[in-house]
Length: 339
Length: 293
Image (cartoon, rainbow over all chains, first blue to last red; front, side):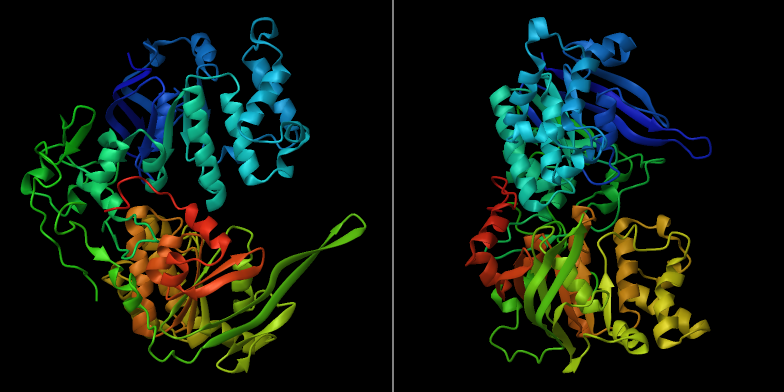
């Protein structure tokens, strides 16, 4: 049984004077025990909302509009608050977007670790000395534990704060860690070290990860499997290597086209002209159709069909299930519209 | 991608090889020369005074129609260099000359005239535009201030500028407010505003890092066409080596306030001579499979 099963999950943003925005629309996926899943999407596609829905952390104006999230077989949306509190941080931990700036500025780091342990009832008799555990987890994230514990957050660099936040998430040995843009806002070289660290820790400790990011290169490099999200829907879900080698959904192809290695002899990138549809009235058919260079007439009317394409992956394609990356002839559009 | 033809419009390909730069051809005479720029900030820590060497002797030349990339980690002094070029920070030592004229210590009206020649494109298109002002007002402001335009002539120029940055027809965008536009459209407005006073030099400080990846290429392409068609010089500040490779003819790498490596982009990226350049290159994500595309 997978650790996390998301089934037909939908989230709406409702406000008094605006039509509801369907931020997450009928999303289903699994996260296996020990699996590193990347959730890739652009701004406004609903990836952070999906992450929050997975943690049952939706707050007004966001509303759970349908579907289930099962963690280890338990439906999160059927639990009482008390049951949920026992699950949170102990079994499901999270690193929020820019949470390195969310450390309490007037408390030393040590106190913030102690708070987390007290709030989640660390039991020294069965779980050991709390200070030992804090030192262990800080060493795990490659920090000078003694020094960091004595510090206030402002005395640490951005990269160090991000490591502290990661250590806080791993403190109670959770089974699932949801990370929302954990490297955004950090310097490139620091980003690289955090990504390498995260992957090493995940391999060593075997927790599951949902890594939410807009950074295609990083997600493909670090994740076992990638979910590509567009306009509130998961449009492709496949092992990273397969997705990189042969993207199936036209949107994924577009994203891959925007990436290249600057060291290659010939470097070129492609653009995806246009912008995503408004989420208060998503198109009846494929949400990507208006921007899709290979769309057919039916795409505007027929919603995408999730179809099995490989034994391990799923792909939504326009209208009909694709037979492979070359199943549909690609008409090359004009090379450049301006110029 | 195994397909013979990519389904998405390919952009920026011309800048990809050595042929894309004007190497070998007679280098155009420089527009702006920065010579030995130094910026030292002093801060007080209790009774002690401490000096922070933000920039320690940086020299380069910017030529019309060419893009010079300035790459480095945060805190390396990239933005301080930009501020010294625009006259918002005064160098502790060194000079900036525009076509042979020393512009390091300009004041008042002269500084204002100089600034119409040197325009900036900022990182955050959400913060760079006044949310209460229409697109037309934002783009029109420098036309009023620097060129003294008003009325129909002003509106006409604004529409032409918007058309020129791919917001066409411009008349459709003039009265829009920033929140009605996407991030990419906003950055186009910022570029149109920078081009309004007909500058000779554009300083673009991370102009695409806040944008979605799928539209970054379009904005890069717009910057490249702008440089070529308007024959302006550009200083492109970034930490992203891919965009530097695509856009810039020359590249310099800064670390702790000093330039550690400088040269044609293709050479620096493909055959880096300095260990720090290699560190930056090693930080670029390298997903298996995609690279061999």
